[in-house]
Length: 168
Picture 1 (tube, rainbow, N blue to C red):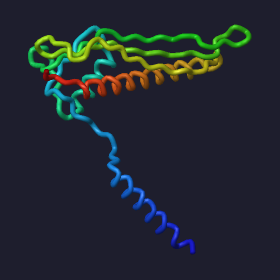
Picture 2: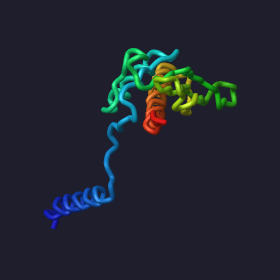
Picture 3: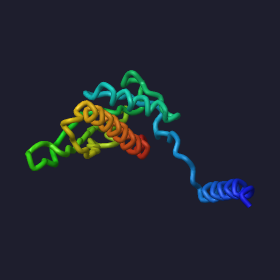
Picture 4: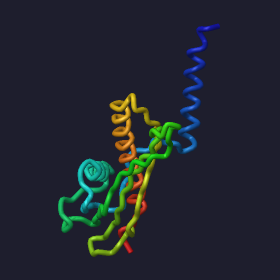
């Protein structure tokens, strides 16, 4: 009787795959952007700008231009910021919980200067407990949380860019 279990599991897995394929489910891969070239400009630099440029280039349809002149659109990164807010204290008045916030302000312009996406602020946050006896571990956790939030901001930005229209 136990010799039929692996075959039954394979059959069920195959049926599940057919059902998912039949309903139109597919893994989300790179989605094309509605413009052929983009220049990324602005005051935001560092890792966040690098991630944005890399994600635009990985869209498969859009080339990242080094100059405004060679670009169909200009993505202006107007500002980015991080906050660390105390949201919980112990009875002794020590920090027990923090809220980490990261935001990005941007706008998208056509080559002729028309605003395709007006100034927009994206934001994401995370909460984390704090323990003074594990400061190094908590510092590493904070760095990982900010990296994760940065990646989420890039995903939010890409969804906005996917919906942008350069014509009009």
